[in-house]
Amino acid sequence: MAVDYAQARMLAKASELRPGDIDRVNEILENAGLGRPIRPPEASTSAASASGLAVLPVVGADPMAIRDVVRAHVRQGGELLTLVPDYQYNVGTVEQGGWDAEFFDAAGKKSGHGAFAWLPAPAYEMPTPQPWQGPGRRPVIALLDSGVQPHDWLSDAADSPPFVVDAGQKYGWYAPLLLDSPAPPYGSHWAHATFMAGLIRLIAPGAQILSLKVMSSAGKVNESDVINALTWLANPPDHDAAANMVLMAFGRPADPGDSDLKDLRAAIQKLSGQNVRIVASAGNDGSEHPVYPAAFAAETGLPVVSVGALASATERAPYSNSGPWVREWRKGKDIISIMPLTTQDIGRQRLTARTSFGPYTVTASGNGYAW
Image (cartoon, rainbow, N blue to C red):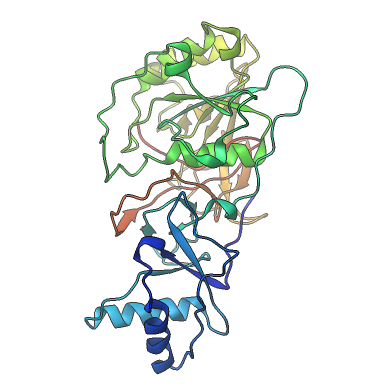
């Protein structure tokens, strides 16, 4: 499910919004022929407390043009409030080789391939997550990833089971020692699991995520850590930790007969005997070479679903891996989800982005992070 950005407003850090700022910006826009389109924040539209963003209505002007005029003024030596258009925009496509993405470091939603942009997103931008209403135990999705970060949008009522459970904190799983930064700037994949959790919340709100951190904030995954996590899932210490599905949005290229795959195959086979479904991404190298664990889908008797990315309903995304081992295809561009809440004043930065997400029931495709 994609969520569109509103085109009739700008966003600004509430802490930087001072009396007279809107008048100063409007004067600059008026001199550029855009009139005075920015209105003060409406009384009924307060700043998003989690992300510290103020919403400024825009009337009669293109937010993209506003942004360009403001940037030009800043480049000429002017000091201005940072304004961000609250809607999706392209700064480079895969076909053009535009791997760079600008992002505003606040609570956000990220768009994938086709619109490389990190934009702030107040909590009210996302649909309200639905609580679990089914009978009995919630289905459990084991998310092997970078570790889900706290987010208000993922929380449940105090009297209901949590939507996200950390396997280490709750059940004593020994997470691998990963050399991650304890403070900003975090690695490029620090928020990866949180983004995935947002997709799951949108598509399967009745599920519960069992978060197992095997990916570093730099996007690195050690195969032995994955095998240990799968082995632990096959022998959970508690019934509530028993997974119905395992999601792995990473992989490495290998030949089908590679002896190094033996232990990984065995761990998946053990889960297969417990009717646990494995969903894995095909990767985004634009190659037909098998990527594992996704390519296990081509082997008889392994419950693996491999998912590739689509650019449209009828067209495979050019960056997605492909081949007979890719069994499912889902939308893989312009997918919107949540990012961790943070108001660290890191400013505007450049981020190299090579990710693609396409939901398959409760998962996403197209991530080809190397082990």
